[in-house]
Amino acid sequence: MGCLERALCYIRRKKMKSVLLLLLFLVINSMVLGTLGIRKVSLGLAEELRKNAESKIILESMEADHPFEETDMQAIEEEPNVNWLNRISEMQVGSTTCIPVAGSEGSENTFTVHGYDELEKDSPFADKVYRITEGNYPQGSEDIVVNQFLAEDNGIQLGDKIVFETVDGREQEAVVAGLFLSGMERSQTENVRTVNRIENQIYGTADFVNRLSGRTCFLNVAVYVNDPEQLTDTKEVLERMYQDRAAIGITDNTFQKLKMMIGQTGRITFLIFALTVTSGSLITGLLLAMWMRSRKTEIAVLISLGIAKGNILSQMILEEMILYFVAFVGAGIATKLLLPRISNSLAIMQGNSIALELSFSWQSGVLCIGLAGVVILTGIAIFPYMKKPVKETLSEMEG
Image 1 (cartoon, rainbow, N blue to C red):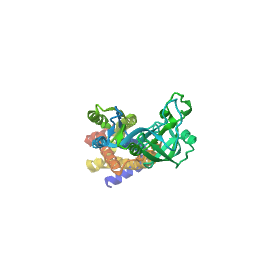
Image 2 (image 1 turned 45 degrees about the horizontal axis):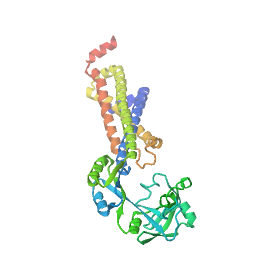
Image 3 (image 1 turned 135 degrees about the horizontal axis):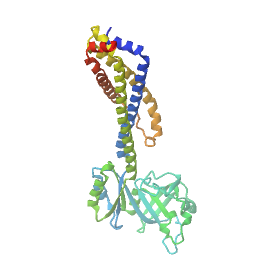
Image 4 (image 1 turned 180 degrees about the horizontal axis):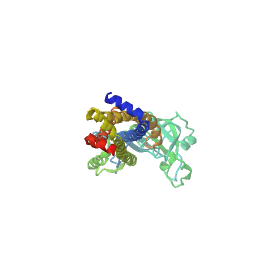
């Protein structure tokens, strides 16, 4: 009878021991695969976070008479860590077709037109100060968003056109794409100038404001970076470029908070992984040592029957490897079913597209390492009885 046949016979004969060791291997592998799956995803999230955290540097022109020009935007875009720019313009205009809500006595009847490359970001709408009540954000270069009270006072509806006029007589037509409210319109005092009232704030694109002003210039610019880890270095570069022209600040709160959450998840999963491997190895080693001691007579008998020690060692190792492999397959199925549920319970994973599962290469690596560990532990447990003389073992039986 070969070593493989004896191994299978022993597993069938010692059902209780086999089931106990199988369950132990199942628990260990489930925890190892689960923690490695979560850790792998945390590393993937960290990489994705660096690209999508939208960390940015805000440059504000210190002098309204010397705003940023197109050459400045080109110079900023050439920096290696710069992803994209949200250019921000602003100017005061009148209108030939729309009357502003009156402010303090004596103030001019003008509007303030704000232009953003992306109005959804870096504006009062991004900070939830204003909210769109009808329509959408500007989609085209001529689209604007106006206050709902201003629209009601002038009988303006979505799709209507408004003509704005600058001090030097330049006119520009705009299409109303959306209406907004802040909730603070009625709480303003009578001392607020007409141009500063919430109702008289007009929001459009930066290109619209530039066409209206007749020049390409920007009061502020939000510089979004590729790698938030290099945000400070990029800020220092921009400070050297515009130290006398701009006030510079950074916004990185989202990245830092999520980075901390991911770091904590990674540390916790690594701790669970280390404790699982350590405790699992100790428990498995102790069980194998106890069981091998009870099998010393079996080992002595097999040797006395002329079976080589290497053959006996192979049998013992095959027993544990078979049980480990079966347990590993079961753990793989269990984690594949349970990990998606775990991901749904983790706040950091909600709404994320990264799959919480281990690849085949990772699972193969864990299997190989686990089998190697089983071979080592089995060899350590059986070594004293393989080394011991057969006569001594048999005499202990008689005694």
